[in-house]
Image 1: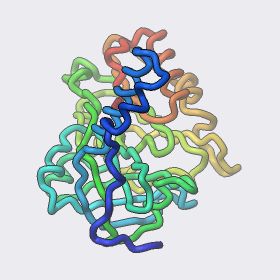
Image 2: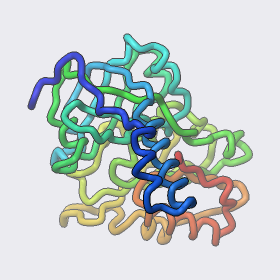
Image 3: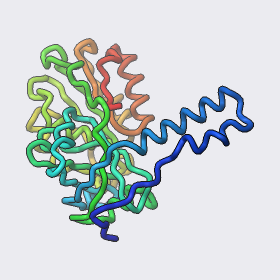
Length: 290
């Protein structure tokens, strides 16, 4: 997610709902039977989804402690899939033959990268024993399967044009920085806004990805504020959790002219959203990619 994958891989067997009907009819009330049939039909629809085989072009650590990995997939032979990625924040499912359970991954590279270079880039959190762990153990040339691109992505039009929303507050934790990278590098006119801040939370610098991109992001008008929950004694920046760091330095000049983008831990998203709304920021202007 270091066994080499075969060029073709078998899919798990399809469920056959008709073969389950006799068992579903026995001992189930009509409402329960209907719910069971609905669940079977949903499983069939999910497994019948189109999967595209594609080789890996890069698998490499993205953090100093190797808890995060850069994973790139060559989709140059699947141009329809490549161009179907149109909005930062969209995601897809990726599976490897050694695991029947796919991983949901937000695409980290911007849409223009996919259409021009035929590649999807991901930031993958390596969790021992998971499908993502198997993926991170693969190498260049190994074949994986990709689903169709899914999700509405970040609906930036809700915080546009730039002069109507000069302040945009961005919050990311852990691997949640992945679709945020796509948003920043796709360009949302940050340099035409007066206050664009990225609060990016991680346990420590060893677990923080994309540090080599911070200067480039800041050159586009995004002020990067790293927030470490367990830093070493040399760290002089923001400490604690993202939501606490924001509370200490929120500086919202006009909530009616402020938008926000969130991706990461559920608790962070809920607490930041509550605080922004309490300060007068419209919930319609707080963007998430799901």
